[in-house]
Amino acid sequence: MEIIVCIKQVPDTTEVKINYETNTLIREGIESIINPFDMYAIEEGLQLKEKYGGEVTVISMGPPQVEKALREALALGVDNAILISDRRFAGADTFATSYTLSAAIKTIGGYDIVLFGKQAIDGDTAQVGPGVAAQLGIPQIAFVKKIEKIDDHKITAYRMMESGYDIIQAQLPVAITVVKDINEPRLPSLRTKMKAKKAPIEKLSFEDLDVDEDKIGLDGSPTWVEKIFTPKMEKDTEILEGEPKEVASKLADKLKEIK
Image (cartoon, rainbow, N blue to C red; front, side, top):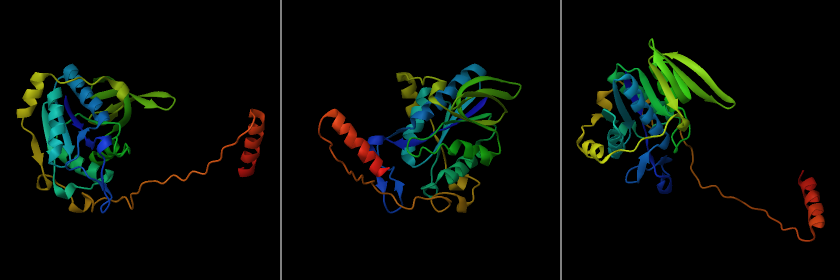
C-alpha cells in the first residue's frame, strides 16, 4: 500500500499577517503549525500502513520554512517527505495549488491512496483534496469518518453527511479527505524526533515538475482576492428602561416598527 498525505503549514491563528499589496497571507517569518485537520490525515496514513503494509509519503507546497512541518511529520513515523518549493508557486489559489500538487503526485507515481485533512484553517475552502482528485482523474471521497476496509483493489469508507453518513465504495487509487472523528493523532517520541532531524527531505522545484507556467502561482490562479479589510461593526443601540411589562411592550413596539 503506497500512501501519500498532502499537508499544509498554516500560520498560527495568533500570528496572521496580511500583505495588502498582493492580498495574500505573509507566511515567511511567521510562527506556523501543521494544519490541525492534516494531523488526522497523517495518523490515518500511518494506521493504514500498519494494517496493510507499504509506505507513507508526506508532501507539502510552500516556502523553505515548510521543511519544519515535514520534519514534524517524519517524527510521527512517515517514511518520506517531499517539499514543493519555488517562488513561481507562491500565491496560488486552490485551483493552482491542486494543479501543482497533482503534478508532484504524478512525479511520485505508484500511489494507492492520497489523503488530506478536510480543509485548511486559514482558507476553509475544502477544495484542494477534491481538486487534486479531479486533476489526477481518480475517485474521491470527502469528509471520511472511517475507513472500513481495503480489499480487491477497492476501499469502503464512511462519509459524513448532515443527517448521518453514507457508506461509499471506490476503486483504488482514490483521494480521501478526513474529519477529526476518524482517529486520535499520536505524539512523536524523543527517538523519532531525533531521527527526523537528520532525515533527508526531497525538494521539487518548477523545473522538476511537468507543469504549465500559466497555471501556477498567483498569476496562474483563476480566482483572486480583490481586497482585504477589517470589518467595521456599526452598533445602533438603545436601552429600554422601566418595569418588565413596560419594557416588553416598548420592545414589541420597536420590533413592529423595524418590521
